[in-house]
Length: 251
Image 1 (cartoon, rainbow, N blue to C red):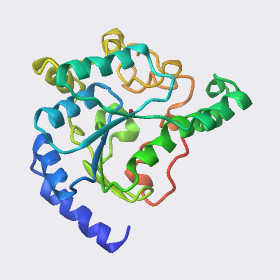
Image 2: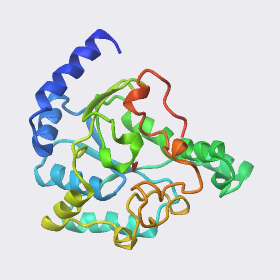
Image 3: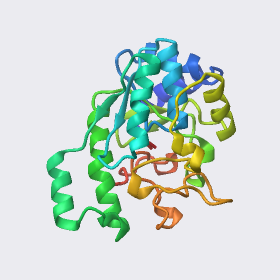
């Protein structure tokens, strides 16, 4: 990280240390006017953050990635959000030509065959569109929580994404899943009904299943792989800062 980036990060850490999520989001939107963006996977955490932004008229752009393989419940949730808030989340799509080439070359369900294929699919459907959506931005807000997985447990609330050259802010990093659920209920925020059927982390339909008793929150994602490979490439852990981004949220 360059010296200027280090100074900027230190400033942000100091300024947001004592702020609650709403206050921190408002401050960052002022610090980076027109260049603060939130990527929503429409999960529970993201629904809470969207509510914070829209209910308080915080000038943060919200977008989601439509991979073309989402659950119908996820699409229906987008409409319920419009009914609730009168606003639409901006939808970003993958390059149709790249998707077509991947499917024709390796098959529509090639991600089950190898980690390499799965990361290639995630790279085309998620990572590349994310890169375009973040282009020109200075601050990227996410719904990451430390309790979602061991890989995310050491994530700082404010960090520097060296691969993309911007600040990342995780407003609900230290919230528990129970706190998120309570916030949704208290504020009557729409959420995906799959959460009530054992799905905690929801991504593409072919790559997500309900949790089994005792499993961690992201065990239902790419369940046929071992835990070491189970990130899609949207988020590079802080411990890998300076290394190239993985090639494959919502999150």
